[in-house]
Every structure is written in C-alpha cells, then in structure tokens.
Image 1 (cartoon, rainbow, N blue to C red):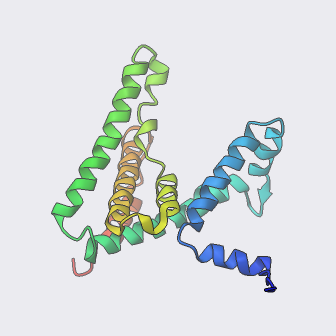
Image 2 (tube, rainbow, N blue to C red):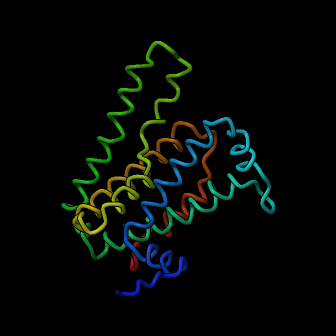
Length: 196
C-alpha cells in the first residue's frame, strides 16, 4: 500500500503564490470577503479597521495613497516597457487600446448623463463611471492564467491603464480647484523617453 506524504501548509502556500493566477484569486476572494463583511451586521468593525491608526496615518490612507501608488507605478512601468520594445511599440498598435479606452470612458459617462440629466447635483458626478477598475481587470486576467494569450493581456492592460490615465486627466481638469504646475512638469519630465 503506497504511503501518502502530506506537504506542509507553508510549502503548499508558497507553491500557490508561484502560480500565475494566485494574485487574481487573492484579489477576488478579498473583494468578496470585504463586501460580505462591510454589508453584514459586523460592518462597523470593518469601517473601524479601515479608520484605525497605523503609524502616522489611518489604514485606508496607507492603502489609497501608499499601496495604490506602488501598484500604479508597477503597472505603468510594465506598460512603458511594452511601449518601448513590446506589443505596443508602434503607434498603430497603441491606437486600438487607445480608442477602446476612449470609448470605455465616453460611453459610461454619456449613460450616466442620460440617467441623471434632471438632477443637477447628481449630474456633477458624470466622471465617476469613466474609470475602469484596473485592479479587477488585471485580477480576472490573472485568474485565467496561461489560457489568455499574452497579446490580449497586454491589450487589456493598456486599455485599463489608458482609461485610468484619462480619468485622472478628467478629474484634474474638471474637479480640481488648483493644479500644481511644477508637479505636472516634473511628472512630464519623468515620463520623457531617454535622449529627448
């Protein structure tokens, strides 16, 4: 009779994290847990955790201003690599995700305006539906793993990123009281390709 050797939980966990779909699975599972928790009778503890102090700032500020900044930096670096020497290296290849992102911004905004045109207060939120949730778009792609062609992953990543960048521009142009021109100039300088 063969002897079955059970792997230690830590080894199984490490193997799971090496799997391409691990990030997507963790993201979707976390979202489900958060939705159930926040909308249950224990929702107050969820909100309390988000507003609990962690060093100099509350937890939700660390997530929104810290972790999301790192996330967008990594995704932006990946997109930059694809634009320099990858799937998006030519203007012809960038055009398709660019137009898809513009459509993905304009159509939800127009639907929102059509549904809220009679309410001037609600109408001010027309830009809310313009941004795709890039984390969930990428998480779903990760769940599918190697079954999704690399070119489709790059295309959808580019659509989501361009869409988010467009939403940021809309927010800066229509919802910001005062723009910081020195910071915009610094960001533009950092985005310039080498040799320009």
